[in-house]
Length: 82
Image 1 (cartoon, rainbow, N blue to C red):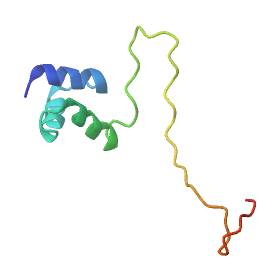
Image 2 (cartoon, rainbow, N blue to C red):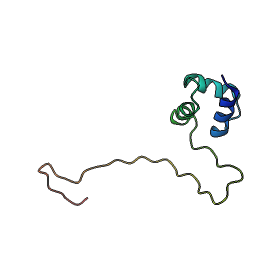
Image 3 (cartoon, rainbow, N blue to C red):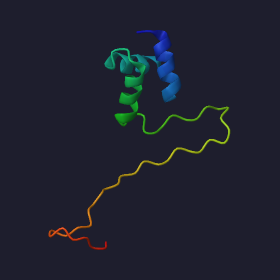
């Protein structure tokens, strides 16, 4: 696996383990973007990567949440207040 791709994966995810980076890159057939997606979407990463140390005026990442969209119509199609 390409060491440059592993270094890119590590910088995006904030990990320090080259072997883990290489495992994710292998799962993603060498595609860094896909490897990062697998890492974060698989629940392994937990959250977004930390901001760069030199970043100023950067908002903290938003917490994850679940929403459910519901309709406010009765079975006869008329709307009602929730």
